[in-house]
Image (cartoon, rainbow, N blue to C red; front, side, top):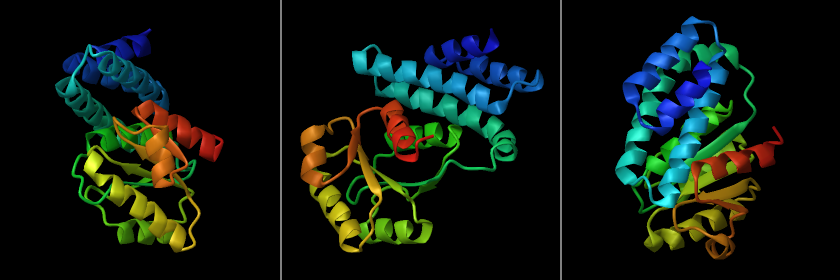
Amino acid sequence: MLTTSLSKAMAELEEEQAIALVKELLGSGVASLEIVKALQEGMVEVGNRFERGDYFLSELVMAGEIMKGAMDILEPHLSGESTEHKGTIVIGTVKGDIHDLGKNIVIMLLKGAGYNVVDLGVDVPKEKFVEAIKQTNAPLVGMSVLLTSCQGALKETIEAIRAAGLKPKVVIGGNYVNEAVKNHSGADYFATTASDGLKVATEVFGA
């Protein structure tokens, strides 16, 4: 099964083979969302290996690059296939933090799963989050934070959203976030892996 081979190539970081398989699957008429699903399975395995300590940050970066290359090929096919988005999600890295790898992997997974994602980028002030939520009416907001020093910004951003009378669900993501950080910041969910972020979206949108 070619899709299984694609998941394996993604997990093993075999870039040339993964890209070749994406093209081959598309050429043989496999639905692009099926191909994305196979890539996602590979990415989940990459995340698992990272958590176990078998892979390191460099491997995560590499996986992100392979996924980006594959999504560049698939993007034109996806837009025609799934015009009906499951919903809109606003995502950004909080003020003072410029890390975007985790955020970008989550965005790729969410887009692949059919969500419309508004990416605010990194070092995002709270006002920008509030403005984007007002404009999009997004029911889910993701905030990425890698630096422990940015916990204050996380809490302030969520407080600003609530003070503006907005009621989206808020998921925070980062390698050190946990239940305590979630409770302290006032978030609804926390995610330590990209696949956790996808699970939260599925729960919020019920899709």
